[in-house]
Image 1: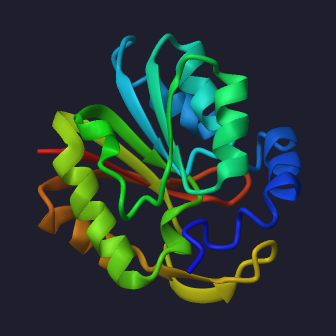
Image 2: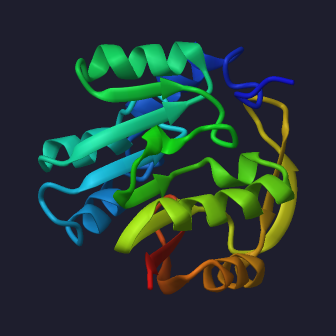
Length: 193
């Protein structure tokens, strides 16, 4: 099984799209959320890709970013874009999250690529890796829906807002808010209680 959910095969095409369409990839929304974090926050970017534009937002704000991506091509680009940064090429499900805790964790465009049980496990794992009052931001459609990813041709699935809110609450997190950005991406913002 491909730990990158088909993204290694289309890495160059994906990176071309993601790095040049910053509005569709949430840079403005993430920038607003980053302002709620301490200036020297340690941030984990799950499914970081090349780091552009998401990790870049945090780095430009002076935060320490750790990136994880299962695609060797993408994590290679991340390392090239941000020399000296902490980066791991591994599946999110198997990752040790650098054996540390974080002030914030972001999963932009990732969660819905995973099977339902992996999404549930990941939210629990994220909660365990956050420091007290640490923040978690992820994107997923608010409705429960399944579709074929246009680029990877793999199945994507949103568990829906009701299920995500339940998982957030069950794992010691508090939902702070939900919102949509200009491109229609839906965000869930949670904080560790």
